[in-house]
Image 1: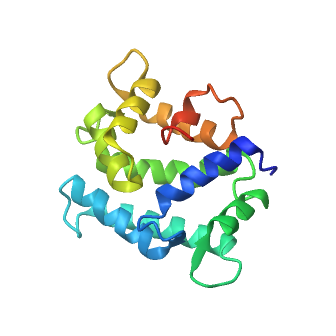
Image 2: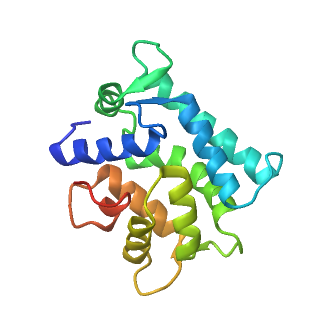
Image 3: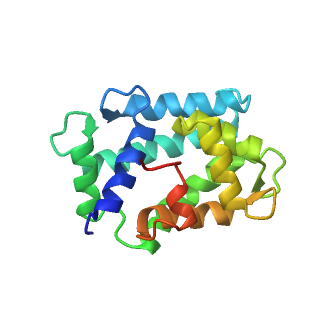
Length: 184
């Protein structure tokens, strides 16, 4: 996969959302802490089946990411390693992307979609993106407005489409390229 200047900015932004402690590396602990913040934000006990599934999905995501990106086997991933993993085909196609992201999004929705209607309110979106990815409330609200359109609720498939656009679209105006807020 070619890393264009635009994709490079998006990957740098995504890397920062993974790097919970801001030390310049992604580590397993970043995923663990993000999972704990997220389940706590929705009042779930550690042994709640939804929390257990979510934590398992996060650790699986970490293991997959580290297996392809941690080139020096240090137990942590630098931004250069992260970008190189994408250049080497981490998300080769939109189809392979869906194989990994659909189950993860399902686990997120099981926690964040408190009424189980398959759609996120702005409050639910603010809560999960803030807890999992450290997005500001202002960014999360703006993103929710963009992705939900005229409806006040964001369907899970709109979120999946936005995630796909984030990784595969070169159109700066595409809604998904605002998934994590401004790329500046």
